[in-house]
Image (cartoon, rainbow, N blue to C red; front, top):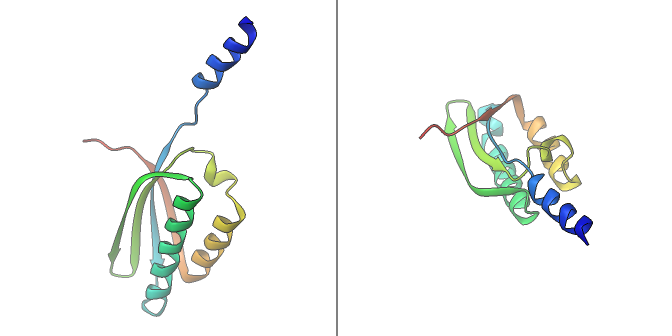
Length: 107
């Protein structure tokens, strides 16, 4: 009977580590509205699939978007579900460059 309890305790100890990311999408003026729609679809899909936690922040600047959100598990972007991959393909077609950074909140 001790083995199942030990396995249960181990499963709690090996919980997924969340990862907050900041993503910058470089975009031309003609693709700006389309990219914003895809970003909104991406966020809704990730929420529906339970891949993210909390909210997201989305900013628009001159020729770019900045999106900040937290994956529930840092491994999700390494092997995302098919609907997320499809949205990433659309993002890549609309963006001239994407930059990803893992970030930590300071305050």
